[in-house]
Image 1 (cartoon, helix red, strand yellow):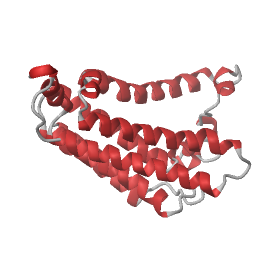
Image 2 (image 1 turned 30 degrees about the vertical axis):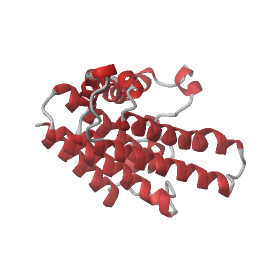
Image 3 (image 1 turned 60 degrees about the vertical axis):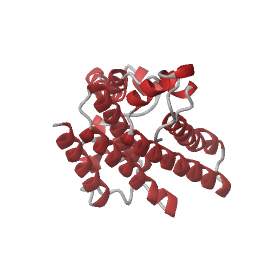
Length: 233
């Protein structure tokens, strides 16, 4: 069941990336080898997550790969700047009126002139997305502390990947916005660290498919000195 659902999600993402029914060329501008490569890298992470989900039957393992799959899909959508479609100027590409759009500003949410029902509806949508991000992770019960202290290759590779991706987002959303015109070195740094981060996350998922985080935590916590024999990465 999980494998079938994961496959449907991946097919949907592929369809959106290859032949989107929404005309985005006048909304966002993705150029450069790295920017064009990054959504497909996230898709590769989603495929790896689906493979891991299909290969496992233990609930905590399935939840972990499901969480990774959600992260990967949202990462691909962010790289394609799909969130701009929710703005008043672009929401018509989704067949909706500008009055139904959302603004990603605190003053819009606090403004009394903004319809209450509209704010409630968008809050419910964002809460659902947040739930998809948090509930599977909580159910996965990954023993991150044990894995990190045990110098597990998966945990350190995954953590480094998330760190690089996060640094890329800091460049994009904070540092480069301090400039009137983003410098070339800034864009290069942003795209480079994000690409490295995505590749590290993909490598960590390959490790997790071979041995899940739960299996690794058990191996790390057993044997003399709290660790067992090295075993495969």
